[in-house]
Length: 176
Image 1 (cartoon, rainbow, N blue to C red):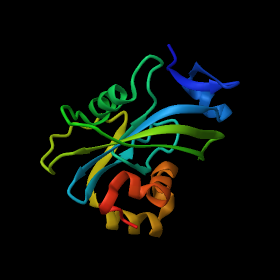
Image 2 (cartoon, rainbow, N blue to C red):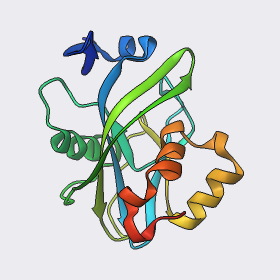
Image 3 (cartoon, one colour):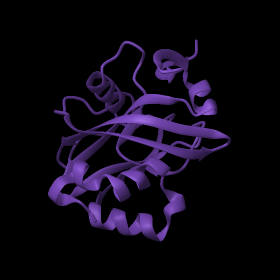
């Protein structure tokens, strides 16, 4: 069965098949999570089997909520599914909207609830190889420099978050 996500069609929020939403560039709900250890953020490299942006570095995790799922429940679920992370307190930081070409004729037009969680570098991780091929902790200023030096290695949404929304996400730790 295909995954249905909340998307706006003709002004109404409706369940739409995820791939259809991306093919048509429909505005849809999403979540993004940043797990922080001081000024360091846990980022992941997307698995090569992902249907868009495979092999690119992204924030800790992101996804689309199920039709009847709250944004916070979705964020907690996805931390567990992608990285085996449980039990972190999620702090809602912002809701942003962006539209980005993610390749292969697919468009992400997302209304994203962004969450930040605090953890130590000793946080137990169990990356799901179907979702994640690598993870690393990186200081925000180092991440900002890396994205500037090699933007093609990072997902469009991570670049947008760092460029346009870093203060609302990271506050005084903002890499800008």
